[in-house]
Image (cartoon, rainbow, N blue to C red; front, side, top):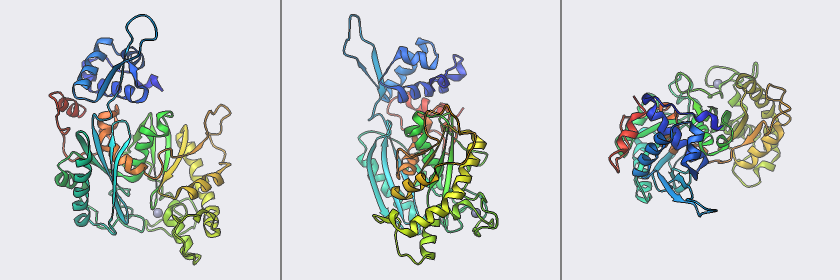
Length: 412
Ligand SMILES: [Zn+2]
């Protein structure tokens, strides 16, 4: 894992070097300068210069270890939990959720409000108010705001149409509007890629660099994490595989295909199955996982999802497949259990050290956490800052003279 964090000693590589040094501290801190140098293969002088810049803008803290023997103990560096914050927002079918995340990935505040059938006219003022409240609660500067919404984006017959997406948002420049109403650098992403980003930064991605994440939003999405970064695709929809036609002659889907995966495997599919069975049950109710109608849905969902996972594994050879999102945890847990044994694929190896399938370590909040990570990922990760569209360049409110330089350099 560490070998992938190599720096470059050429001058053009400076923004990249800053980011990999910060990434090394994030993943391995508290850590000494010598250990950073070994991990990122940069000269000690380069690392010292970069660390000094980060200390000046308050992103890193340094402390001297208690001496274990003779000689001066090394200075250990770590991300400063109060060095910066990001607001994450998640717009769902019936509500808006928000949280305040610090640079170590800890949630420092959380709000939610009912907002059924949100349109831009109702949602944007609610988002502005929510950001204002979370910002007031932040014990330090807020670097930006990220918003996760159901994807895919800008795909005719899939975006903002059909039962699993939000109506009224087609053609709206959401990031720009969000920046206008909040005054913060604003980032927008699909809920599935955002959740994948949170898994990459703070979940299983901390130990596995290549994973495929399957997201249960109201529909079904996903995200491909390659070398610790979310792969975006040509139009930002990579991994949105809910509309993969997987059952020949199967259920008609709003996208025009038949037998799409998400018509069998999604929260929407579960609710439809319960309605068709005449069962008045909320999947979130305690004990819902034990209901025979839910068990029947799981049995119907397993074959198409097994086929989809087999396809993903053969196509991408991930270190693991992660399941997560808004499906109530007891049901997701039971579904994951029923998926075993998985179909044979290239992932069936005798030398595996971890299971092919895992549940999200972050849980049902991962898209919301990922929304906040959208806003700080440019600062924290070597490459992901280039992945997501921001409303306007330039950005981090400068608490010290060098902050602006670091925030804008990655775009060159
Ligand atoms: Zn479809």
